[in-house]
Amino acid sequence: MALVLYAGFGILWPSVGSPAETLCALLGLGMVLGYGTGLRSSGPMWLLLAALLVQTLSWGLGMWHHPEWVGGNPKLDRLAKVFIFMAVAWWLGGSTRNTLLVWSLALVGYLVASFTHGNGLQEWWAGLQGERVGFGIRNLQHGSMLFGVALLGLVVFTPRFGRIGGRWVPWRLAVPVLLICLCLVGIAIGQTRAVWLALVLAMLAAGGLWLVWVLTCSRVKRAYLVRPLMLAAVGLLVTMIALAVVFQGTFSERLSHESSVVREILQGDFGAVPYTSIGIRIHSWRAALEWIAERPLVGWGSEGRSLVMDHTAWLPEEVKERFGHLHNYLLEVWVAYGLLGVLVIAALAAWIGRGTWLAWRSGVMPNDVALFGATFFVYWMVVNQFESYNSFGTGVYVHNLVVGGLVTHIWRWQRETGQRVFPSLKPKVTP
Image (cartoon, rainbow, N blue to C red):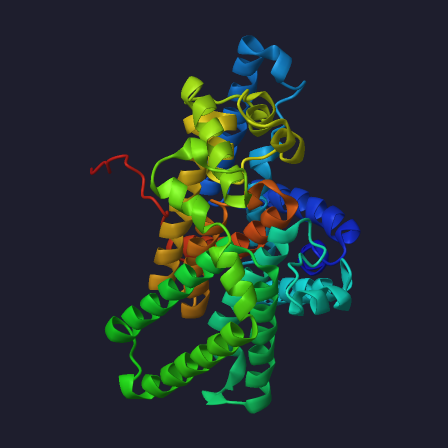
């Protein structure tokens, strides 16, 4: 019940979703430790321990080196919160049905929130008139990011929902198609260029992976797959053309607005880059690299990103007053916890990636779930380079629900096969 409330109300009704998240996490992690035979020694649990140790080490060394800039405690939740997916994975119980149900609840919850938060329908209308809107979700970027995740899920899972017994059912197909159109409009009026870029790359990755699967792995005759593929491609093309026509002014303005900034960057003249949307990101990244160079291994502690923005002498005061983060999750982890923190996050991504591959190859994870996981990884990697979503509640919410759905299948694969994602390097002893 806590997981259901967390998924359905995490965005729609945070006063319910947030306590449910805490309850789900505490009970789930307790169950993994108490009853998760073979799971409590899996990669994520060791990486959670490593994250806690890295944060404590960074805080302790910060107290010795720069105590005036370090808080009274190491704030272990900064990295630990992205491991809540283990509780989500436990409660899903290795079930694809449960996973899709929870993801669907999150989808419905956010779509409803986009009409009830902020100015509601007025905000949608303002967006259709060319104004950039954020749907009342934290800031202008986060609403677009959520619509991007929703779009990826709808595109990948429409064949599952739209068919019964291998046959397409018109009304079941119409529902996701209408929701896809809604998401596309939301993404267009959200006017977040990083989301546009991430979606293009993620969709290309999805198409490429699907094509490789058809050519190498599918047991279905390729002739039967050509028609739905062509219909999907034509439908997507027509939709994109329609959006380009309707929102031509919006797209052209957003894509050309900072062309001069891009030109300065390509010429390598970073000092001449103005403090526009892109320019602020470039300058904050430059400042972060300067701080990373001073303490590359252990970082500056949990307040590292704020230190960069507040104490970099050459950053303008108005920028310091407006922004307290670096618009880049990788740099935020690096400046706060050094290379050790980055290695923890990289190791987690590697474990999930290899585990997803193994669970899919063995048949435990369905094709569409694995495809969604791969495309989400591409999308998430890109958007987090321009806005540090994983440092905020909305990003943590998306991360834990999606990764939890993947990990529950990985754990199920481990239980059924008795294997590990990364086999032990300890040599076998033969009698």
